[in-house]
Length: 158
Image (cartoon, rainbow, N blue to C red; front, top):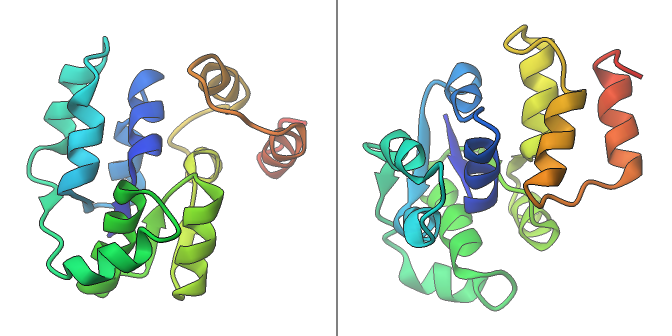
């Protein structure tokens, strides 16, 4: 089981690879605000994303915890981190560096969109990640040259 923040969902929907999340993690949860962020701007992939998110939306109960986290990260990331903590899950899908650092500080296991693609390749769900990394960049994700080279090396595509 994993909780996801907004950007990995939007990015994976944008490149047509949302299904990878459920191939790797059978259960995916998202907080209500992440759902709102995902469907707020109507994009070509919005309907697919909205269908994917149905049944995965969870209410975050500890609003004070969210408020405290919002001192450092945005509301979507705060709700995602708080939901992980409330549900006793230890995994979160998140790309933002501040959010990742706060999640790690709270003892959570963090994976990002690129990490998910690496895992998907290693588990045989996709054949290559090089083109997908290029598609992510076209979709607006900033991937450092170092991260790209590391991802390609880890998947034998260097």
